[in-house]
Length: 165
Image: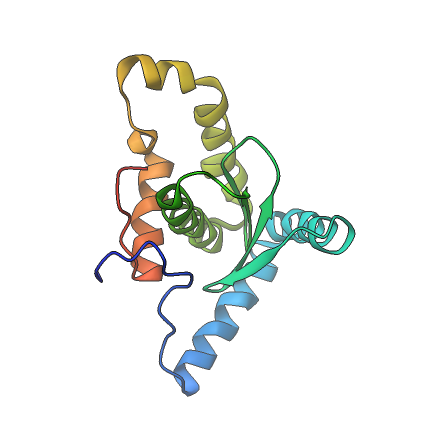
């Protein structure tokens, strides 16, 4: 892992070359075939948010992050990540981008199974167990799919999260 720099906007760029181009091609091929259902929903939401609503976005590794004016945190739909805009804590934004990017890689592996293995448990954990987590001092990463997203986000961005997320 690299040193922590919460101002880092992007994962470290891989070296250029044929193998890097091939890996990128294979990544997108798998996302748009095996992960089609997740990426189709994400892509439609991305177009609505960026083209119709005009929300700002940025590239982040192989994904795109859209910053939305909502009260929630982050949501990953394949190659498309949606996050709260202008969060008051820079570390939250830094950590959440890494975490949500981990979900992008889970979609690559799981394809249509992402909905059942990751999305539904994550949605329930986020929205139904917030009180339980707070009362019992349970970290968000206590659920398998969230710990996995943290691990893979850090692995594939080569960025280290600053705190438990």
